Length: 200
Image (cartoon, rainbow, N blue to C red; front, side, top):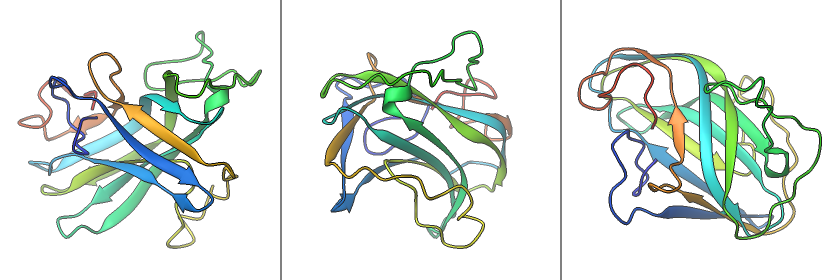
């Protein structure tokens, strides 16, 4: 994750910083990060994990992450989603794997407003063949997306925060927010240079 809404595996540039959005009953903001267009047909298949280094102005945050396929005309299709309540960020280190964070959910650990925390979010495993020229979008928000049809309605209906909150996601060499994506075929030249499972 990089500045200018870029989802790419290159090293962080000097002075890269952060991106922010507002969430409140009066406006549900979000952050969108896009890959460059895939240079060849590319298969994504398996579990996905998102690591966010983020802060909030409230004492808790509801984090929603979703992956989307974007065609060359800009049409978007929802692929999969993941969720985490910030105060339940504590990991079960015995069960957690790099591609599947497991949380204890034994206690609430409220946030200190403005302090940066690491949030590990499991995104439900997915399978998709991205055609050459298509992009992948990562969306970060604090609420469910409105379903466009009945299948997208499955698993929605989570509680929305009723308090105003400003969420800041950091993406720099000190706080390297990243997406662990299982690329199993294609697009290993140009965009993904280091093998089948890059950090984005």
